[in-house]
Image 1: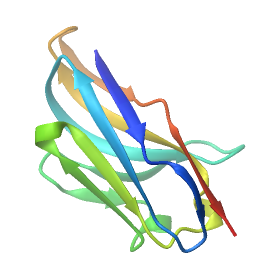
Image 2 (image 1 turned 90 degrees about the vertical axis):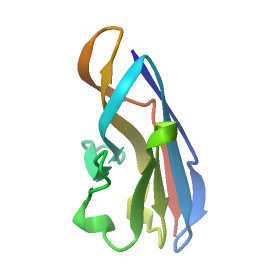
Image 3 (image 1 turned 120 degrees about the vertical axis):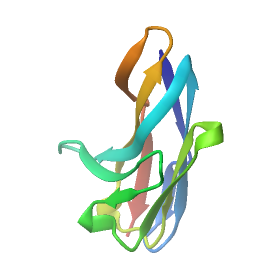
Image 4 (image 1 turned 60 degrees about the vertical axis):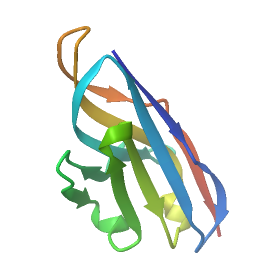
Length: 121
């Protein structure tokens, strides 16, 4: 099993910045992709950004140029630096990791519990 613990959410004014962190722990052999998704109120969960174990990245068009995803493979941690935040960025942000574990043995996707980001206008 893998546990993902997110931190760094909060309330910020438009134009401000926040940095989210997500640390993975458990019986991990390796982690493939890690990423961030968000779910605004009343809407479906959507991709924000992902990063592979080799460091390639992918961003939603709405955050390109403002958000930066990075990871520390030694710490099994992924980060999301969010700059120039807008009210429409307000959502619950979820961490996701695709991990190969020892117990149970196999590959699966795991989710964090979510962290609230609120951007005031």
